[in-house]
Each structure stands twice: as C-alpha cells, then as structure tokens.
Length: 312
Ligand code: RIB
Ligand code: CA
Image 1 (cartoon, rainbow, N blue to C red):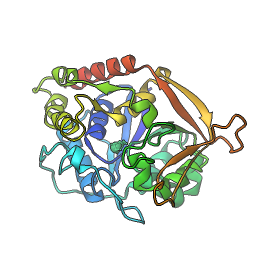
Image 2 (image 1 turned 120 degrees about the horizontal axis):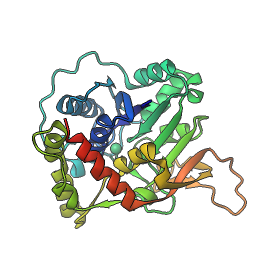
Image 3 (image 1 turned 180 degrees about the vertical axis):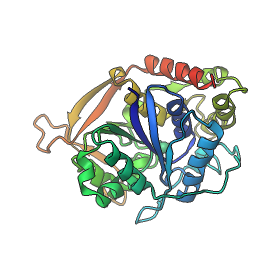
Image 4 (image 1 turned 45 degrees about the vertical axis):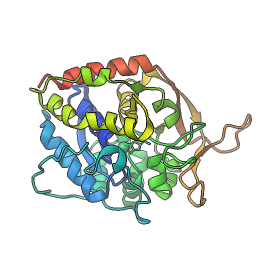
C-alpha cells in the first residue's frame, strides 16, 4: 500500500528535486502539494508548484494548494541561490492558476479524509501547517507523522548565524507547530549538511527524453553555479531531498526524542531553534530529531530514484 503524503513546499531547486523523486516513487501516493512562501514569494511558490506538476505530468496528479504570506510577512527569500524564478531561471510556461484553494484548507481536507494515514513533509516555512492546526484544532492528532526539514542543533544557521532558513522565515508558526501534539520528526541542518552532492549528480541525470530528466536538466545546473559563485563550493546540499529520504527510508537515520523550541523575538536570534540537551532535561520532549545519517546510502537512493524518474 503506497504511503499517503502531503508535500508542503517553497520551490526552490531542492524542493523541486524532492518533488520529482516523490511524484515518481511507486511507494508514495502524493495526495497533495501545497505551496508556501519562503525561497520565493507566496504567489511565485504557488506558480512554481503548478509548473513542476505540469512539467513532470506524473502518473497521478496531486491536489494543489496556494500559498499566502505569513502574518508578519516574509523576512527573506533565497532567489539569489535558486534563481529569479526560484527554479534555476528555467522560465517554465504555466497554465493560468485554476481552482485555487488555500494550502491550509487542502491540508485539512486531505488529513481528515484519511485520519492517521497521511504523512506531511514540510519543506519550507511552517506557515501552512500552523494555519491548518488553527483552522481545525483536532487535526493535530489526525496527522500520521509530520516530517520537517528545518532548524539546527549545533550546526550554524544558514540565513543568520543563529537560524536555519525555513524556521527563520516564520518563527511564530514554527514555534506553534513545535508545541503541537502532532507526532513530528525534525531533519535539521546538522544532518542535511552531511549529504553533499557533487557534479556526479549532473552526470547521472535521467535522459532528456524523459519528463523527469528534461525537468531536472533545466533546473539543477543553476544550483551548482550559484553554490560556486556565492559560496565557492563545488558541491550542493539538497536539504529537502534528504528530508524526503527520511520519509521513504527512516532506517538510514539515527534519531532521538528531544524537547525543542523556537526563539521568536531576538534581534540576533530570531528563528533559532533550541533543544533541551541538559544531562537532566526539564522540558517535555515534543519531537523526534535526526542526529545522524548514512550519507552514502542516501546518495545511492537519490541516484536510484532519479533513474526511476527517468523511466516515463
Ligand atoms: O535551510 C534549507 C531549507 O530552506 C530548504 O528547505 C530550502 O529549500 C529552503 O527552503
Ligand atoms: Ca524548501
């Protein structure tokens, strides 16, 4: 039985790669893809979700949900990394956004339709997740599992010295979700930074003749260019793809139960994630967190999943 999955995403190149692998994974039933502002503004995130699904034309089209800005507005974006359009400047044509439903409504509908069966994979700021829980308070206990790419334990932040990007963009929503009753797993930078991807990735993309291959060939090269130009790095980190692998292959990760919270006020520390790692913790554990990953096995899965995405 394929695992029901909702992907909440701010596409972004690493989001787009994660979506490609998920939409062609026969073990996953992606019932919905909901857009959230983050890497790109909300309207562009909604457009990019539609563009990705149109380009990939997966065997089963998921429902889509549209993004709207967090209450406090977005403090940053990442178009300097992902391109002016968020998808490597591929400039995809997109049919007019039709039947637009708010992301949080789509999340509520799909979770309610299959209580305890749906995994939500959050690849961007947690605005939609927090709004879904506010819209339907009983939803928290109906989600099978919430897997979040975000935060940092001892790793430095990537948008400020203290904060990881997804949490930084909407710390109030992140704090609310961290405190929710939902069964949750956090995949922090400490782990996603352990999976560098080299130019081997470009050399092993699916054939241009496949929809997955054509899409990835238009989107991925920009990530390598921006990482070299901005950071002097010859490898890239597809954080969201690592979080997807935590859904499909949790056995490749070590985890522990921990209490986590989010700083929402600090001038220098807004968006920082804090975990009670004292010898005798006093905060009540509220999540599972990934602490280690079998990097080679994750890269192997990515290569195999890309090959599969190139077979249609
Ligand atoms: O910090 C990495 C996260 O921020 C990834 O999800 C990336 O796509 C951006 O959203
Ligand atoms: Ca993302």
